[in-house]
Structure formats: structure tokens, C-alpha cells
Length: 399
Image (cartoon, rainbow, N blue to C red; front, side):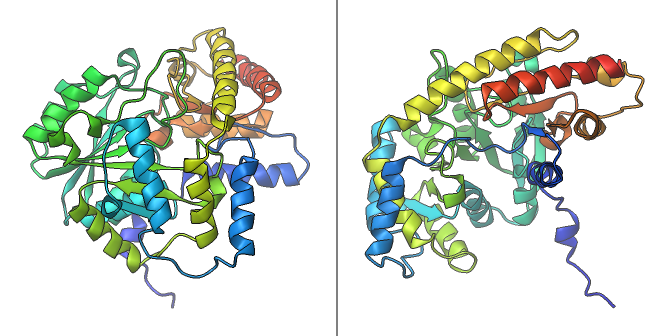
């Protein structure tokens, strides 16, 4: 007889983005010409100056365990970055370095939440937020946002959700946002901050895409708005997106020292420290930045504009133009309502698109908005052009 799994694991579904990537990879290995717009990682190499720092650390035999919360030089570099870029003053005791921003978030949720505490999550959301709340024994509560509001959480909707959620403890805030690409303004953040201070809600502010913003958009950290909201905010960031270091696995949390210390205790008994070579490389990444980020940002900007233009030209497709990150979410509701292929939801839509035209997209249901699909424009312009051509042919065939 097989060992019975925990009830908790029954609530956890596989990551749709990782599952899609695996399926697309298998098809490519079989010789099929798949164009994948699935996984959210830059298609650029880690800058040479960072790789050279890693080589130097390895040659110096910096290969042993480090302090659980991160090496001192890295925590100082993170503090300097937060002051320089975000106007936020922290000390090293306010910083926890973890193996990826995903690990940073789950550490904070476990540290902050008791059983049945509620985690407020604006929808669409990053696929892991609800499951991270469940793993922390908390309850995800969804707050629907709308395309006409640029997929932003309105203060009045947050107020209503707090009023309806007597155990509300945490607000997950992601700006720039995955999957929508929306970015909050100072005034919008101020209205959210006012409510969180009033109701003593902890904000977990996921800012991993902060360097990837376009047009005249400015990233503002909610923690920078006042001392009152800063003491109720944990800022989450890392190096994976801006520095093209997804596989290096390093994220960090910055916040009130008692929360950071508690999250550090969680980490001590799970993953422990980030690998030593990555930490050394990230000190150099933060302290000796070259023009790599700007070059990558400009290329993403160009791709965003072209992908938006192509999608806007397709009949019955509406698109919000993203302000940041590297995703775009066309609304496919008309095709869900008017198709001869028996497609009823975005999961079926994406499965059939991959099967028939070898284009891999992530279904909107994965992010809590079934009327959409997500493209990642961390892809070449040639693939964007060809991928949208196949997408448009598919839509024409099924209508």
C-alpha cells in the first residue's frame, strides 16, 4: 500500500509555466518546431563581469557554507542598492538572502501567517502566490482587477476585500506585474498604503521586475512612501530578471527586523544559505553594474511594441499595453464564446494551439483570469513575428 500524502499537497497543483516549458521542450527534442512564449526568463546571457566574479570566487575556494541570511558583503550591497534605487534605508539585519525570490516569499508567509490567516491576492496573479499561501497554512482571498483599470488593484476594491475578510493579514502586491505588465503610480500606491496602515495589513511587495519598465514609467516601492507603511512592508527582489541570472537562484527580502529574523529561522530549517559562488557573484552584480540592464531593457521595449502592434491587428482581440516586465495578456474571450472547435476555456485553447500550430502560451486560468492567455516577449523578434502569425491562423481556423 502506498504511503498516504498530506492533505496540504492535495491542494498544490504543478506550476503551469514549468509544466508548459517541459512539454514544449519534449516536443522540440522530438524535432518539432515549437515557438515557446511560456517561461518568464530573459533570453540573454548573464553579463560577463558577473561570470568573472563567480570564477574568481571559485578559484579562491569560496565554496563552504555561509551565514544563513547571506554573506556580509552581499547584505551591505543590497542595502546600498535599496537606498540608491528606491530611497529605502535598511541595515544588514533587515535583509534575508534566499535561493530565489520565490523562496523569499514563502519564508515571509510562513513567518507572518497563522492557520486560517487570509492573504489578499489581486487577480491576475503570479501562479505561485495562492499555493505559497496554502503552504503557509493561510487562505488565499482573490480581488479581481479589470483590463479597463490597467489590471490595477483599486483602493475601494481593497477596502471591500478587507471588510469581507476578518482574518486578513497579508496583501500580495506585485509591481511591475507578472502576468499583466502593469505598474502602479505613487498616488495609487499611497491609497493602498493608507488602507494597509489603517487595518494593520502586512504588504509583501514583489518588485523583481523593477528595472524592466518602459516609456516614461517609473517604478516606486510602496515601502518608500512613509515610515508607517515601511514598517508594514517586506520588499522582495532579486537578480534573476534584471541581471539574466534565473539559474543562479538568489532573491532577497528587506523589511522589519523581527519579521526578517523569523523568516531566517524558517530558512535555517529548510534551504539554509544560498550557494556561496552565487552570493559572491551577486555582490559584483549589484556594486559594479555595467550597461547590460539598459541594453536588455531597450530590447524588451522594442519587442513589446512589436508584439502589441501585431496582437492589436487581430480581429476580436483586445490588449492592455504593458508598462513593465516582459509579458502581454491578450483577451481571447470572443474566441472562447465563438469557436467551432469546442474550446471552452483558456487551458483547452492553449493545448490545442500547441498541438496544431506548435505555439506555447500560458493559459489565463493559471493566473486567475480565464479570458486571457499570456505571451512572454523574452523571445527574438523573429520568433515573435512567426509565433503571432501561427496564433492568428489558429484563431481564423477555430472561429
